[in-house]
Amino acid sequence: PPRIPCTRLPLPPRIPCTPLPLPPRIPCTPLPLPQYEREETHRYRAKGQVRERVSMGGQDAVLTKLKAGEYTVMKHGRTGKPSERILKISEELDRLVWLPVKTLVAPAQDDPRYSHGLADAEEIRSAREIDRDNPELLATAILRRSLDFAHADRALSVVWPHRTLDLEFATEAECQEVLHGLRGLLEAQSYDNDGQEEGDDGQEEG
Image (tube, rainbow, N blue to C red):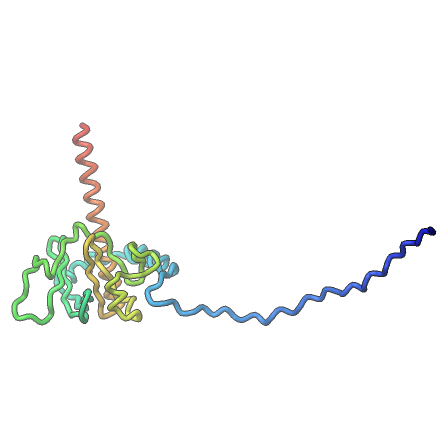
């Protein structure tokens, strides 16, 4: 039979690809952080403040005020409302004391209910700094429960292996004074202890 010529059908006209308009961009407004959520900016800013304030000195003045009991604080506990305390440090700078403001008989400064040695303190932590046991959170468990987050800039915790001392100061300035004063004291004591251990090692080797 005769061969039928193969005639190609015309292709449909190509539809030009016109990109659809993008929806209008919504401005990115940061949401307020949940209370005591980790904030890297606060941590790095706090580190800068530590270096600045420690370099300015004034640690001796803070320790003198602590010895004299010039700081009145609110102590936050595991239960109940915060209680007013007078914060002091022993003359030997080895024990932190928090005495009741209103009491008929003043307790002894070595009373374990109202004092604790500083030798085994692990950290002086601002309420704006990371909880090492819960790195996604700030402060301590007690302050997260009890402290108004708006007052976080004026609160700190002394952290021991099995307890914390959680304090709220009258002002941010007072809190910063004590925070950096106690940190400087612990660093100096740690440096002295390390130096003594190195000296002992050297004597044994000789």
